[in-house]
Length: 157
Image (cartoon, rainbow, N blue to C red; front, side):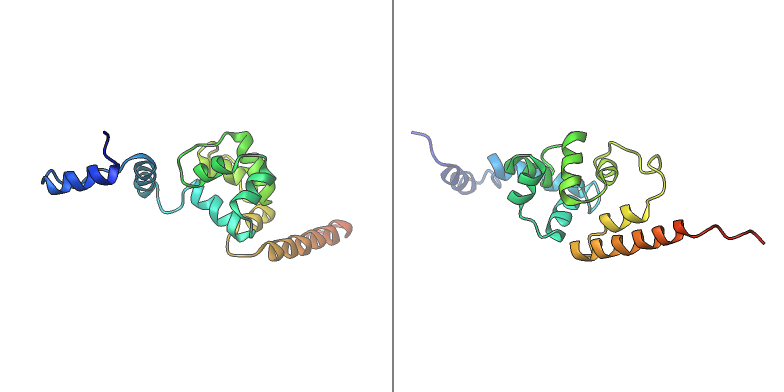
């Protein structure tokens, strides 16, 4: 009869063979966390999670809005899956952030090639402000642009 993982773990410890190795989901999560440590503190998954929380969306709500499965989105956030450009675009649309920002974070686009960040991109990508604040800032910026576009250009001195 097969022993459970806990029984095998206890047997390994009592027999003096060292500490047991994690198995199954625990091992996968441990590997994902370990691999994140070498990538810096802010991976694509971390960034998506922060954006989702900033937009006050649950994992399930974002998955529904982006048209992906809840488990798949969870795996992306934990760094276990690498999403395609199409999935990143769907997530960006659902989060109301720049797809280019997600492409760059995923390593699909060189940030230097994407040009300077526009005001809109910077506002949409900022995790420190709320969705309401983002919308107000973008509305104000758009109104300033419209006002300036309506004015005749000033002559150069």
